[in-house]
Image (tube, rainbow, N blue to C red; front, side, top):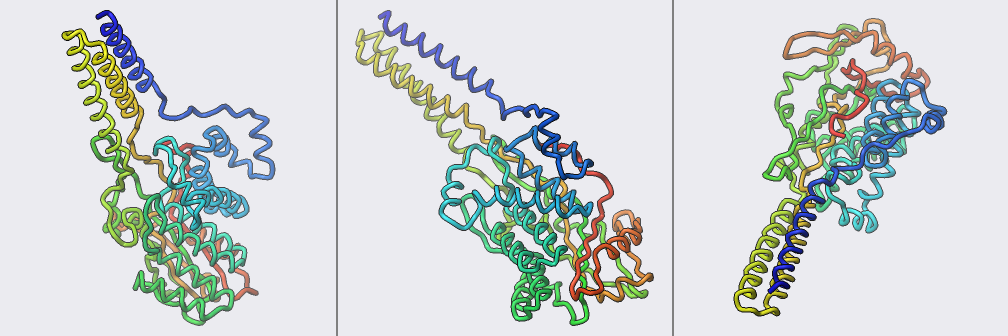
Length: 425
């Protein structure tokens, strides 16, 4: 019976090895080292102020490249560095479309996703949609109305695509900007169609009047937060506290010739994060937790049965029974090893400098350029107005062209620089 005892010893050693190997596996690869010369080459033609951000970008590599491109791209957009911003969003969008495009190749790629916490970041539908949104705004700044419209439609597609399901497109802001771009491009019937779709989704929106040739777009508030729920932290959930608490968020106020301009909330990104096609979702389950539990349960059953067979073999001096038990126990260990290696934790990396709300208003250019313009953000929680008239007039001076029939001015309530690193790397 030494053979059966030896088999037990081998199995025990195998179990220890599996548990140690699985328990010591790192969550993901550490940041690589970037040589100064490599960073210098990468920074050629880019503003020096972004060097610390691109240092992190290169060190974190492909796993966080889309996340960093989104973060730095939006930061550059808010600073008026539109060429750099467009370049970054183009890079992010190119990678997004390798998985989230409306074709068989991308569909196949979606079916082969790695575990959530180690795969390359591509974002949730609302995040991907906003990458296209900001790219479209850059096209608008450059008077490229066809590409601006196409970018908004691309964002609508991203809003509908998840890993395993397809949803309705319900970003009213994207439809509205697509209508604005079509209007600027002289395509009245196309603009009418997109404005109609936007108003259908958000009835507070309205078509611009004939003399309103400037779109004032204002963003406010903080991005949606992701967090984990579930026994194995496998459920992705969102902080939805800002969905209904609009009154506690800073709101824009614009006066032209002493008349108040009416801003409309075109988009609530917290609502977009916590819904799919207008349907509220409490959590998103990537399916790995059930797999982890099943393989662990199977492993327990196999090892227990195998051990029982080996004990019976030892009592009855039946080597064939002992071998069968040993094989079963080995398969049980393999199953438990797979379970141990399966990390069901949801990916909670998120685009942290996104706003909470997108406001829109349309005005006559001649009024916006007047010295009587006054613009401020009001914090409705603390009743604390923050005057940004000088920033608005600076944007107006740099954005408006008297020879153009269509213009865009973008404002935001941020006054702190972007953190170099995301808190959830």
